[in-house]
Image (cartoon, rainbow, N blue to C red):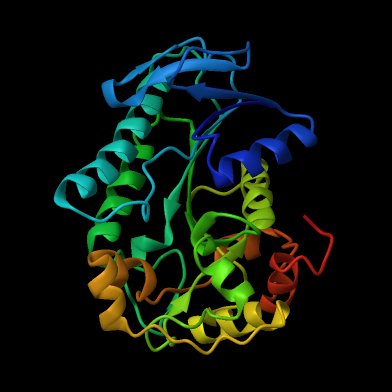
Length: 300
């Protein structure tokens, strides 16, 4: 397939580009700077500009574009940037598709587990309603923007959970502490994080390019885990203790609104659509995922 990707330089984009190229796909990327090769195309999503040649003849478009959720404090200006960067990029892509005589067959447009807000221990399948909060509102509007794609385009909005990686990602700041034996659970640790390993995120996106699936897809592993279990498994795989719990008030003091929505929110997602479609995870269990993150296995 000829695939055009926005947000290809991020953690997921880098892994996914490699996975798709290894499978023989032709992957072009959208960049904000001057293109450095024939596989790059210029765009400026903040202004709604894109080189229309990029999407011409494309079989699929993958949208991973958006400002980093946990990179900076959530000032009102930053929250606007989180929202605008996602909606602007998505609408730039759907508008470009609308100008094509033959739009791409599929549009995979990233969403997030934040769609569900904080739902405690309730099991969340794709038909669960949107929650409340900053992220829930952004994700709901982000998904709606993706569905502005032209009629006939199969739109998929993967609600990606907490991505476990050997470097960077959601655990980028926590892993060095765990390796030193000074990390620990966040808050009471009973909140559920919908975790998934980076190879499985890349594998799922590749799978969704061809699977007869549309609409929201919970992108997480089939085994649910609360933060206590997640941290304990990771620390165990690293042969380190994980006893230094960080209380919720301290998290709120240090990072403000981010704490409640990113670290203390509970989303017990179930990947019902992926499971029903026959997707096979490389790391379906937390034990397998922890071993991979710790480098105890050679699957990558």
